[in-house]
Length: 451
Image (cartoon, rainbow, N blue to C red):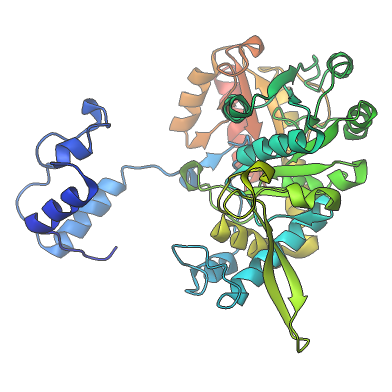
């Protein structure tokens, strides 16, 4: 970090510029018990070298997720990122504080976005992808708005097995547009209840949302859900894990109309939960309704290849009543990371990462089954995540595992109380070693499943 000197006069000028009279007034929204009262307890004045050493000592008290064996998932995953990705991101042409999309000065950025869009379109088997959105949840909400705009029907059906945060975000978006959100219950196998979906479709709906795999990690019968949605004249919005597409049928092949998902695991670190990357693809018939931006390749008058921003349907650029969305920007650097990551792995490497994740996840589940200490509420096919049912509260087991250097999963009781206090979502990526899988198994065995 660079050294920036602030005098009393500098601070007073800054406070005046932002319209507050004191530093205490500036931090008034922060709860008092979270503030440091008085001065930091750092002792006597120190040299620069001593100050750096103290800072490192204090920082070492933190325990980052990357220092543990992480079995956390639910949309954000611990994956290996090739060094070339960070190198590309660090180049000054890309590493700016603003999205430099002006065509005449930023052909490199436009081409990088175009390449990212092309790779997402190919991965999902869709006609086109946009330049990215904030995160997977935002992309899903934008897809719901887009479906309602296309069909002029203010009703969307979503799986009840969506994370609570995503359901709340959808409700917030829908409330402002008067859109009705109805939930499709899940069966005892953890999949969409198709009989319930059939009944819900007796009333007009703009779209059916299909999560593939769903939040419990279970693989859905996507072609059947697609046929039911289209049979009722509703669009199909597929929310997918990008790595699953290396092994499962891509959404374009089961006739999805819009495809969204969380792209953090495509070359972006976990970053304490953000920034994330929402990818968004659609059929060509709906491109003029897509939120955000689309970059295209073209040629100039002399036949030279170039790149241009082709569409952006935000209200700033077109008539407000015709705007699908007012979302204002894309995740440029995160999208660049995804493009660099996919390029570095290539088709073979990408498939290998997906295959390793699935193989290790199934191996861990078999190892846990052999302990006899836990159960599995859902027996269907899964990709890289599964739900574990501990005999005791998940929070007790999680704390024991954390002390052993293992982040053992995401407790589900808060969002899905019907699954019980012992329900835990466990994810396995290609980074987990056999020794870490054995450690997880031993923790379950030694603690009797967390009793």
